[in-house]
Length: 551
Image 1 (cartoon, one colour):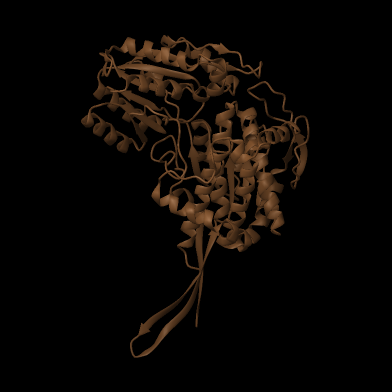
Image 2: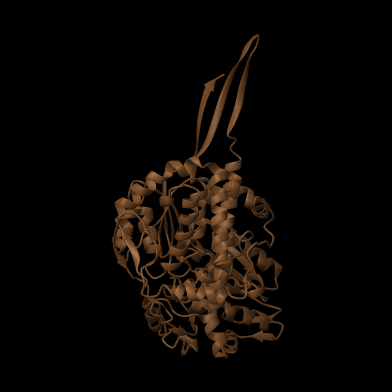
């Protein structure tokens, strides 16, 4: 396959990176003109803006009408109309495309996907601008998370799929000795076969980063894919689907191997998810719909990332200022609209020891509030970090939550210097007691955090562990200068099956997860059923079908 030859070095490096887990990426995260071209940023923005008020250029079977569903958190009128297709037509078309995609084999499929990923990368600024406008992410975050970091996750899934499929030989000559008689000789053939149509349900906040792992893992292992984007973040998914269909058509394959299912009705998503022809479902979103999928879409394998309650445990620190800056950024980034954002900060009610002396619980809260204010003092910096609030439900939750504890840092509205209609809010931090579990034990999505006065540092550990086990968590963070305490938290994280970050004071934040190094989620507590990107995330998307005959 020509595409595989063109991208073999990239694939080999990616496979090697899976094992090393050190820093590696072929996709630069800095939006530098020297790396991406002097005109790339302007061209990408212009390409997106040219779609405003128009029909998106995508032709698919069963189109019934056009629908514009997106409402930008920045107040920009998008009004892009996407094809709404008959569900049965999508399913029939995906099924019809499967044999040819299967016949392409692992090498053919992976080569085509690497070519498509390369073209997605060339349009990084275009995808990033679409991500920013539809999700409310700040411009820098939209570029990094929406394009190169998402591309890392796509490549990681492709590499993991290639590695697993490569372990299955295409054939073997089997000879069983028969003593003095001639051996029994058989020729055996082994074929990696996808399980069937994959449904990838996108989220409103990270329409590429959370979509690409399942999309590319399913395709690489031989499955046609129907992408169901969130109604408020269709454009990044449409761009991706269009590029994939373009490459498929160029190779003489059915572009309907990848299809876009646009709808603003949850009922249509439910009907699609429960159809017997859907073999797997990737989902990122609320635990309510995630639980519904697990209960009703029993015919499919579910790869879900859902709600969790992420915790920071503060016992002591020898870098107090660095800790506060790190926490302030973690709470502020994208207005807390990340599945990895810490919600609860557990601090002993009798305070902590630091390199700046003893700090009471109340003093810690005051210092954290000051760190947030310092971080967000410049309006242009603040709006880049905060982005915009993506939904009315989050704004309502922010308003209601303000009365659930003592205010440590009040949330306030900021005016965006470029988008006057943007909904921008600073973090809300509230102080509560350990006994107020009914307040902080549920996820409060958005820029809402609780500073919890615990009975002791040991109580903080027990509480964080039980929350992760019972409610789920994607991240756990701890600050301590006591090695025995850190060992205790490490053991708790293992029991709760949650990723742990220790003493983050520099330019790495608990919210962040690096492709080819960090495993995102574990699949071991209620917050997720899978992990990006372990072998288990990929391996069960295909089966091995063999045939044998005597020679």
